[in-house]
Length: 288
Ligand code: C2E
Ligand code: MG
Ligand code: MG
Ligand code: MG
Image (cartoon, rainbow, N blue to C red; front, side):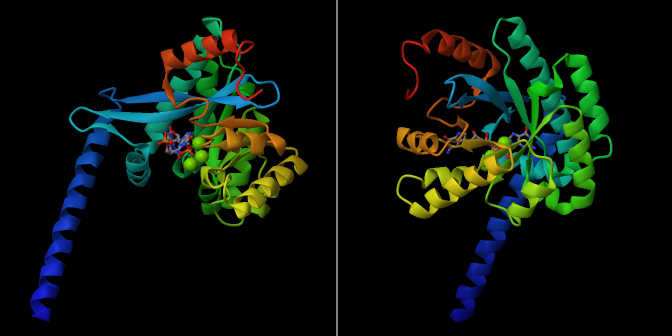
């Protein structure tokens, strides 16, 4: 009986594994064509400066509209893109698209917004990265000071020596550098000193727990103090409530990003959102 049960369990797992690897294969082959079939797009999430009450930038977030499966989350397709190496072409496309959208918004009369683009570990390891960035800035006409690249601790940990050189070159070009999901990786403190970062983004898991959890508060407060001590700007991600915003403001956090302000939006909607925000800012500022 036990044997039967065991075999049944095995069969169940095998079936599940097959379903998983089948799904993975479908996504992988779909992803290979996604770029040329123009199924990839960018949404933009605005960031609010807590001191000036102004929208100071946006983060570009990749979306994949699969022809039959519909919208697929980056949590699902970015890891596959990373493993297969497809992320290099996809990331390059995202950077080019984001820079050209930023320039287009300016032409439509929006104030200058900082454009933040996520950089994957694989891209960071690419020998052609610097020249690709230079070409994209040149072709789009975006000022390097308006571009920021977001990297994770995992990305710099793989090959720290090489990463330092690449990151210093990027900073030398005038481009901003943010460490993303800060507090979730390892060796966070030493990396803050070692890499030429301009911004620290506090991971949204800390922000989520801010209201009830005093440990999350202590960690958030420490990250803000530490980052400011090292002359870096602090962005809190995943801000969803006024309670969270009030806490962050009281601790001197510089910028917030999250559903409280807005979800990531398609380019035209972002443009309208910022335009509308400018007009209504005086009448109804968020949490003034
Ligand atoms: P991330 O860079 O940390 O981006 C922030 C994520 O938090 C986004 O998820 C955003 O939609 C989500 N978010 C923003 N505000 C809130 C909030 O108030 N509550 C909650 N629960 N979530 C919020 P998204 O768009 O699903 O992206 C997930 C991750 O995929 C990103 O995390 C990033 O690591 C990766 N990713 C997205 N686009 C790109 C890209 O173009 N290149 C690379 N390499 N990675 C990307
Ligand atoms: Mg990010
Ligand atoms: Mg993040
Ligand atoms: Mg995150």
